[in-house]
Image (cartoon, rainbow, N blue to C red; front, side):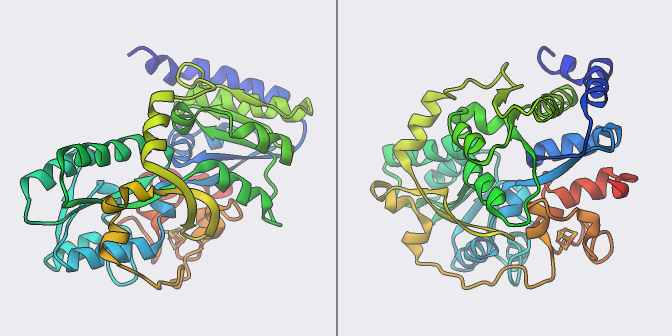
Length: 364
Ligand code: SF4
């Protein structure tokens, strides 16, 4: 398949791994923002092939992992009120305060696992006597489809459809990480799919203000090795730039049609990040004009959940301060079958990635 198989080519990937070894002269810490990149690094054994000097830090780019417990509690409350809750499959096992969506379903709730928010509009059309809520979780990448679902529902005159919004944005999270007093990150791999939608403009002021190189990077082994090489090269040459390794997909201005749809429906707001806390201007909420489609406003559901009461150190992992195996529960009390925290649930979570693929990563 064009643009896929060649980026999984072992020999081509090894060329960049060799270049990294030849270029690096001192220790560097590079954070990959995206959970998909974390899985790519772990699944393909790239962490083990990097020279000792290059340490990858796994960032908060897994939307399931950073969705606050309070929103899961709200979704459970809505199910208990008789709402049809629609969600992507990876959200349904994430622990809330007392139960997950799957446990709420076992208790009699109506949960539909869907592949697209547009399917939830269909569910609303077919169930005019029931309220239907789509759990709109994700980074900038999923925002256009969620926005479109609202536009479709409005056009059809559906009054029984709404979104429970948990949209988070990457650039404010990067700034929050860089502002942390213990932050020791030297460079970032930017999330390629997020930049495919939103473009690269937001990253130039971050690179400039914090003097940190940013390389927008894809997800295949060759992408990751090349992105790390470009970051190491910048660091060794004392350059601070925003570079684009993923130029076959990402344009500097992003996808202008998708941005237009997002801006029609959503506005920037503060968001709570699980394990990190509130970050100003770090998410989307529905604009006032679409308040009728906002489940939080429509149903007045609230949660006073306190995060991380279980002893899960997801916050430190998501900020890159600790590795999954440094958690005392890793692989013992906390496994994908019985997760204590969200990073062990999602396929993009760092804890799950280490659990599934990292027989010998414990040294990294
Ligand atoms: S191993 Fe489990 S308890 Fe520990 S940080 Fe990861 S998700 Fe939380």
